[in-house]
Structure formats: C-alpha cells, structure tokens
Amino acid sequence: WLMTEPYAPTKRANRVADWIETKCLASGRALGADALFEAGKVHGYRSADVDLGLRTMARRSVAVGEAYPFRVAAGAAAREQASRSMWAALLLMGSEGPLRRSLDIAVAAAHLERITAAASRFLLGPDTNSVRFGWPSEDGRPVEFPDAVRWLAGLMKVPVGSSYRPPVNKDGGVDVVAWRPFPDGRSGFPVVLVQCTLERNYAHKAADVDRRVWSGWLRLDVDPITALAVPDVVAAGEDWNALATRTVVLDRIRLASLAPSVNEDDRLVPVAGWAEDQLEHLRSQI
Image (cartoon, rainbow, N blue to C red):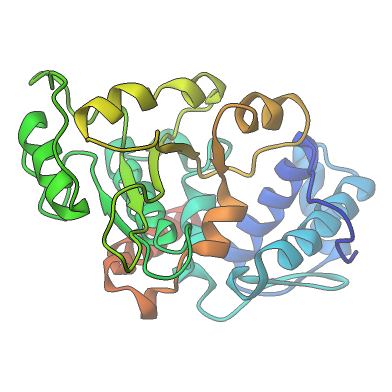
C-alpha cells in the first residue's frame, strides 16, 4: 500500500475512501474491514470496493503525511482530534459529502477560502504572504473593488496598474492572493492568484482568472500564476488533465498537506469549529 508512484485515484476510489473517512468521523471508533463491508452494502459496495477504499486511504496517508487524520490497517480509525483537522473540514464540504444539500454554501465557501489562504502561506516557500481577497474578508479588504486592488497593491508593495478597475467587480475571480517577495525588495517576485470553488463541475473554472487583466490592475513585471482550490480529491484522467494543463490544482490532498494545524494558525479556529458542528449534525441524522 505504500505509494511508489504519483497519487492517481479513480472517481470510485475517491468515493469509497471518502465514505469510509466520513463513517469513521461519525462513529468515533475503529471500523474493521468486515464492519465496513456490512455497512457498505446499503451503498452497493462490495468487499473489493472496501478494500479499494482502504488502499486509497493508505495512499492518501503517504501523500498527506501527519496532516492526514486517519489510521489505516485491517480497517480504519479516526485519529485523536480528527474532527478539528483541515482534512475533515474539506471532506465535509466536498461535493459528494452527505451534508452537501444542507450546507450553507456561503459559509462553507468562506471556510474554504480560509483554509486556502493558510495553505498558500507555504505554497512558495518561506516568507510567503497570503491574504483572503474574496469579499467579505476579515483580512481588512475594502468593499469596493478599485479600493480593494489599491489595498492589495499596498500589501504587496507594488504599484497600482493603470487598467480600469470596474466598480461592479467583486473580486476579479480571485479569492486568495499569495506572493513571495525577495530580500532585495525589488520587483519581479512570484505571485499566485487563487480561485476557490465548491461547484461540483469545476473544470471550467480553471480559466476564470485572467492573468493579463490582473497584470494591468497590479503593475507586475511578470504574469502571475493561477491556481484553483477545491475541497474534493480530483480524480486522475480527464478530470485532472482538464485542470492541471491550465492552472495549479489545489485539491484536498494538496491543501491539507500545506495547511498548518489549528494550533498553529488562529484564523483556522472557526473552520475547525464549523467542522465539529457539521459532524454533530451528521451524527444526529444517523
């Protein structure tokens, strides 16, 4: 089960692994393969599916490391404080999650942006800065778009571009901005413009951020990089290729491996609290 090649899950492998993870979080106890097989019959899962799900979880554990909140052996179990992990929050807001229909999408979207902003601070290495640009933002962003771009330019220490900034714009398709200045203080440093989405069909979102337009709003010497953040684990094949050929993919695997723990970033405390509330709601439905 050790990962010796790039992690490339199928849609079915993701679906079964997500189901086992959610089951472990909701039950709060270890679940053996036999118990999972019995529980999976309701969903049409066979023993081979359960084995696939467990193997997928084992590969996720290798890919994510300590931030993966489950143990996998002859079955699966949630680790201590698993419900407060960023993986759990992303899992519960995922497109196939059992709570998806009852979620307040605006609230969940804000939490996805918070996770992405925290993860983006490690995207470009040490001294990377990141900020939630999507409105509303607790990071101090002005409401009006022209003012917000000016505010962002001030944070990044770059000149404001000369291109027209439409007041009707909310965020220009960008929810999180990350950048890494160099000690010399000169221009030409890497910038990442991230869009976050909870949409089930997100392939079309890969090209939503226009880098050239943003290079006109902010006077950047080189075009910025774009990224798309989603709470799901993106499947291999067409799904992955449709995104990865056009933008940097920040799916659950990558976000969870980059994001700090709640203890390391106070801004993630409301995200963890939200995940625990959602989990209690899920338990009440079982």
